[in-house]
Length: 317
Ligand code: CP
Image (cartoon, rainbow, N blue to C red; front, top):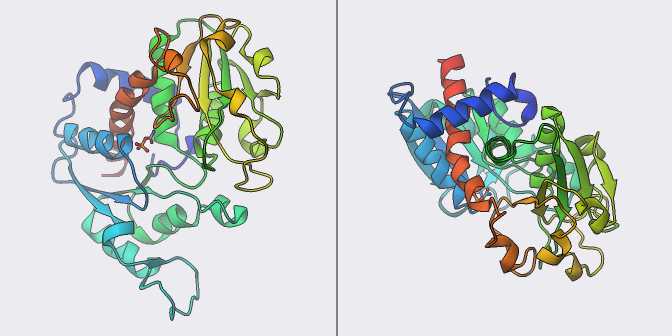
């Protein structure tokens, strides 16, 4: 692949998952693949897992990662074509991205949505402009609408822990104290559908419908218990409204997942991308219980990132 922005950049998902598992078994198998290659990790927003797992993945391939906290340490960037820059922005992406492309062989970008203007966020302006102007491969470390490295790690985790041929996977909305992006839910839906080997359900309160382009093929219900019945995997995540963009319609604190609710499942494995608000999204008992895979998902972020980096190194240099 040239870039890694969504599942559509991946030729063979199974092969990528297998490669991640091979790196998990032997992290330094390709230690010289990225020798003398520099990778820039640009953060417009905070991160724990993505930042550290991608650095380790790069180092396992012999690359030198450099982190740049654009939001705190860089010039305020302008992304609008033709902007008259007499306001707060100092440098245009058309000028900054080619310079960064001259420093780095691969650029990785984390950028959250503003959750104010749906068209702007769903245009993926930031990551697309880096793709257009940097001249080097671009990897999403989570963008306005998608989180593909998380989703790949999720597919690796499912492959490792679920031996059922066609599991019932439920993406279950969870309460939160503030509006969050739809990107993890969009991305997980996109990857589960692309893998095509699950009965896929999405459950959320009314008003939290996701963009239909990501949820094609999923059975969608507002009845949480109905969705949880016989589930093999429950992926828990909050997201804000797509239609009334960025809103949090209704008070749905009772959607927090508990062991009592999960009693109707097939001893479902529990997934969440983290960070998680304990006893708001999920109860302690679920997160600390024997079926929780959340730590495994975080662990697998390294191997997912390593598989993606290796693919880009093999196909572009
Ligand atoms: N899941 C995830 O992307 O975690 P971070 O925000 O900590 O990177």
